Length: 454
Image 1 (tube, rainbow, N blue to C red):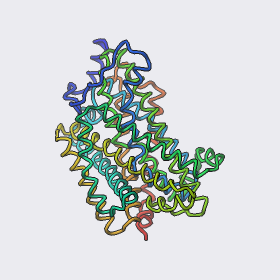
Image 2: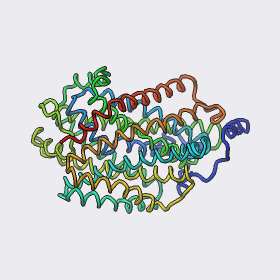
Image 3: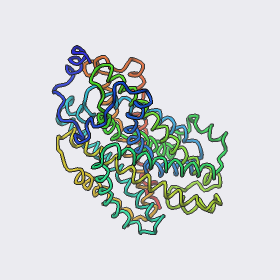
Image 4: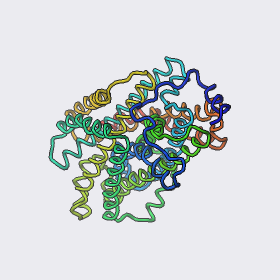
């Protein structure tokens, strides 16, 4: 970037760029300036898949299973719409990190007053804990289904996954990315098998991708729909992506940043298409297997596991379902770890050892999981999974609005400011998210009793 553009961007911020988040991996992946297009695609590939993991975590399973069994293919349109929103917002998140050298947390701390920044930090921590809660429960359920480990003990065991993450981080960021990609391929393969075994009605599936007004009119359907939105477009992923794109050592020029934005957007878009396939596959499998057979109340992952093999008549159906769940839970622990570190360092400038930050986050998630498991059993864990995703959705505007505001500000972004059509599209997405959340709050009182009615 030339001096004029650099000054234009700097003028929009109150302070200079400080210590980068995740300093141990900052700009550690070299990008050769004279490399071919394919080599550059490969070099930039990775951060998008870490982001996509959050869009296929165990919380998605609960909302997708509940939506598919209760309402058939109708909510496929919500999954598609949510994924398109995610593609746009993650592209803006990557652009913010590449252009300004700030992640979203650092940008919020720099722009807003301290009380507002602290409020945004607190809300984001709630979202991370809600996400971590889904991972704890999902991993514990997978351990129970595959190895017969009691649910409560499975919840406790999940605290040990911090060792796996530390081992991968020490070997280098590319090893972490490769591990994530391998698990995503396992999940995708398992659900490709499930779709083929369930033999869904292709015409009905295609019709499900067309939006229906009934989604807004039906409070129960809207509750699940917003849960899907919360499980798909995840607030802490916006903070995560704006940081991990800075692991690439691209040229600090206008051309270098423009190229980095292009390849980072391609990376996240392709990765999110994997997430679209997996989320849609879960809902399609539930609709084709349970809803068609009249079992419209299958929301528990354990119940889906028990029913898949006998209803499909395929011996591997339940086992692969549980294997994919375990891969999903383990994968999702990585994003929560990194996001938690980025958010705490960015908002508070507090740097804790990675193992300590992970353990604190995980313990906060374990306590409510143990309580609900003890009080409500399997049904309680399923309801808690869905509730965690609704909590994520409720926090979403507090991450989306600052992101759109910053990337639409020419003083902060210089020549990389959002063009008018992207600005209007992004603000429309933010408005839709806020509107849906207000509608959910209006229906909340009636649905609270329904949620834990047993």
